[in-house]
Image (cartoon, rainbow, N blue to C red):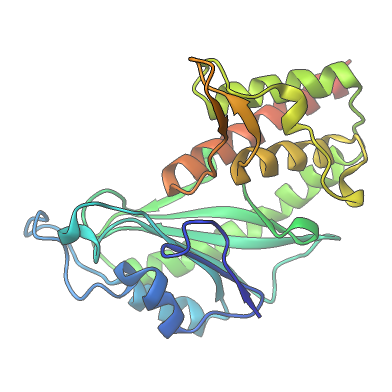
Length: 275
């Protein structure tokens, strides 16, 4: 069973079962680039993402989501930044949360191979990017890229255990109304780069399903993250024009917002524990 993970359907695809190469090629052709972009020099070692993906599959990782950055430059369509979310059967799962490996790359020089930890929340089919920026593993397009990515992937998988422990802690921390509004207001600042937001904090705290009614930090975090990323909330522009907030579809924007929300949740958890 497949479903699209965003309204930008031509660039993003999410599945409940492992995705095959034909589907990946349809939504993220840059994964199958046969050469680097013309802008790359002789020192750039071209290692196609599909080669790395095949190596990860051989180690038990399977792709469940693929995304590619939209570009108006036709010459970069086969080389632009792309993201693959993978799962491994040995990953430790928590109730309702599934650890994932996030692989980022491009063949136009805009990104090295990068590995991040991810958490997929089953109740809302919401993909979160976990951990702190210093935990990212970046691998340049030189040397034994495939081996380095595989080694780094197992390192990320091992470290995700600490993220699962953090989630368990978040679930024990209750937030009152003022704390929830403060969290939502700061999150709006992250989403709109501290400029005036077109919506109010109460809107990003909106509950859309029974499972999201609790007021623990983990549930509040997910309500805010889902409402900000999926968009569609009614608001007003700076000139008073009615609008609906747009969905976050860009890979860079998605990573930045997710990581900012994790740091915000960590800071609030530390404050509550110390109080």
